Image (cartoon, rainbow, N blue to C red; front, side, top):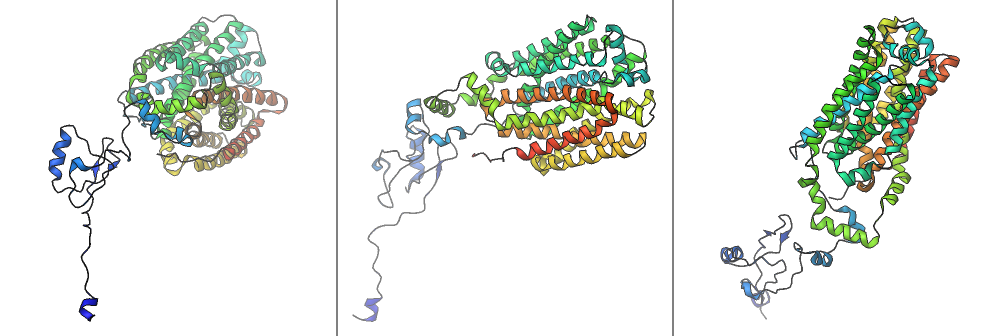
Length: 530
């Protein structure tokens, strides 16, 4: 054999198919297997007349007639019926990984009005809490403040009902009981009535409570009214927190919503002070909040009325989601009682409740007791230092509106550590700087760094909680916050009467430490499979 013959390359016995031409399937994302046909346009026309592309075409050469392809379907197809879904089921380990549509502030269009309605509701909540917190001043401080100062509502109630601070504080305990009681049925209420009707019921309950307060009834009835307010505010707080937390850029949206709470916190002391300075009966303050709640009832009813019929919500009824539910049923459908127990046993629920208990306890303690501290230890003018509370709420508002964007980009989890450390630092400054102006500035900045923490926490809690128990868990977390807002100031008051109002600062620093410890104890975030 010569060299030429040895190097002779024989032609291949089979014809290599040309590069595959990928076509999109009906799903729009999964590409179908290639069609190696010279007359591709002809096949396209056939498809237009009802012959779809096969996803498992096995070419027999460079030119394969369409009719010669095997009818067996091996690749990914779009199931048409529940039976087909069962044949193409997801593994059981991935039942809960079905991806949903993420709504945003702008989509669906009604969401912008829903967020605005939530802002109005939070504004009313802020007016209620800050106006009420004005009465959380000790009897000792009230004697110095007099009937024209910011804390005048407390002595007015004491004079009207002939009770002391400890008895008056029972209204806040009743309010906390309302929050706690609601956590057991809020999810079932939403499931049965829908969000619009449930929100309207919550506002109607608040209207009933404010109507009672506006009539200046006997003191036991006052406690009942605050119980009703706890029930109503707890419901709207849980629903709006869950709604805003599940929107895109939820930290920013929650920052705006809870920033509106801060605006209400600013307005509450100003309006209550103006009424008290003119000698108007303390209960008339609640007629203003009553009118605001009527507007809230109409707004939330209109904006959420079609919520369950829109695309992001209807996606839950899609074939894929129904199939996921069918597989869950095979494993056993949890009852409402089981879901409630699961929510109560959840590590996120327990740690989150303790976190919000400490946060709201510190927030309300500073709001209600800083005035007394400035009067007793800084010789502050009772007619002026009352506005330090408004400065504190202004800081919270600015922090929620302004810093929430930066916190969202920096990362909510690590930002809370920095904000917690800053809160401890400025609480120490308010304690150690022997100057009213310096203390007032420190308190305002303290509000600034505390502001974004609540939206961050709600965002992280919602991400960590399964969708089935979000409403119940957030309700319990909110009830813990209300309990902290009642127990921490009450405990601070008892200590203040024994040793002095300076105990406000070590109490708050301890609560900030509890917050950071709880934050560290939360489970790690796991990215969802999309």
